[in-house]
Length: 78
Image (cartoon, rainbow, N blue to C red; front, side):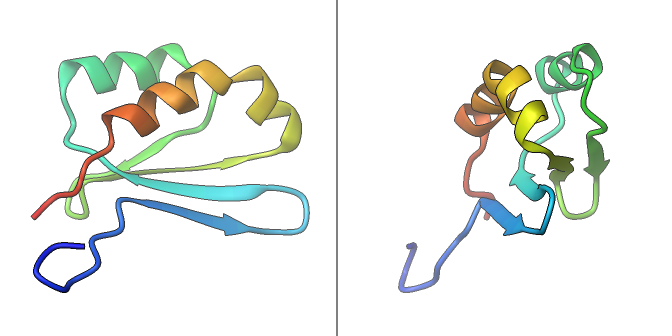
């Protein structure tokens, strides 16, 4: 929370067979490399400064390191 305003930088939307994830990130060379080296279908929304992707339980287990790395790099954008 910043000045009484909530600044969510990660969003999880559960669905029947998967979970949709949105993470606010500035696109850097490092983030671009992480995305291109993953086998996930990650979409970058430049106007929102956000990456979005869906995960099944198997994809979550197989890509845990990539997801954790992206979450660690997430930050509140003002």
